[in-house]
Length: 401
Image 1 (cartoon, rainbow, N blue to C red):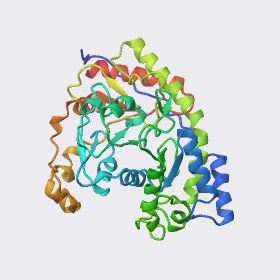
Image 2: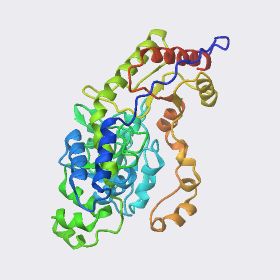
Image 3: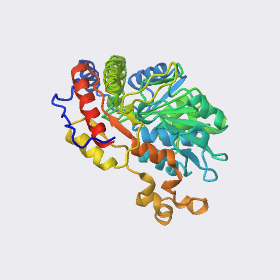
Image 4: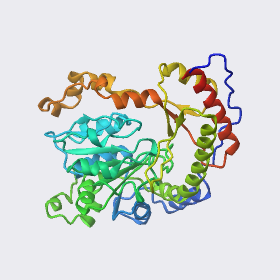
């Protein structure tokens, strides 16, 4: 029960921050500046080293670099063959780019509910008849990939934008579906400044994705699929390849990820242990055996009903907690709520069964929006800070839940 008379302690310690870019990053960038190699139309040594490192990290045969995670997603959906005739099933609890990329790839989103008590797509909600499934591992929490693969015979594209280094059932995310896509923007655990990576075990997916945004020099060197050879001199006209500076930084950042992840995991353990000791009605999603989470904000799920999320978040902010809300409710955004506006932006929708989504048709999604708090976990040792967070978070919940 809420306790209006309780005192809420504020977090007084500063948020512990690691140095984001260290000597290895500086040396990698300086080497390229000295060489004058800031762009690569093929697969030169810097691009190759970055891609090979991501393929090794995800246990996949191929990795393909892009200038953003969004570009990687668009290429992946093209590569698995989405069409205007069948939509792309996805959870609405994702970044807006993951929704709109289905439209840019010539298809449309088919919203499916979030699994109760989770932040990820519910395998039981995946509809029949979709052309592909886009699975976001939301805030690094691994989706139940075995159940999702069993729920559909259509290709699955993993949105791993939050899930660098994460695993499900002892297998790296980005290796379960037909393709996996990682974002490498500034705030991600692995940063290229801006960038993206597509991973796959399917040579055809790799080559089809390459035609979307890479230079003919690379296409001529790598395309082998008979029906793609006609594209070697042109590709499909987009320019979404990764600059060498971004590739160099992404490679060094990937090498630094394991140590940062160990520190973050230790800090989360400190937090959840302290919360459990107080009886606070909140905790991190329980992972399947052999699973490892990613570190782009950590969702904590409140187990008791939250009747006034706005007041709760005001209190969390006032207590100087490192929290933020989930994404905006994209289902009520003007673009998605107005079919005429959406069709004017994406003319191919004039010939599809698109209708504006009803936000109330997704109870799991609405529950997640009310009951989930995103907490930023430091990636350097910070036990004292985490205990302050636990005390302030517990007091806020006792006061407002």
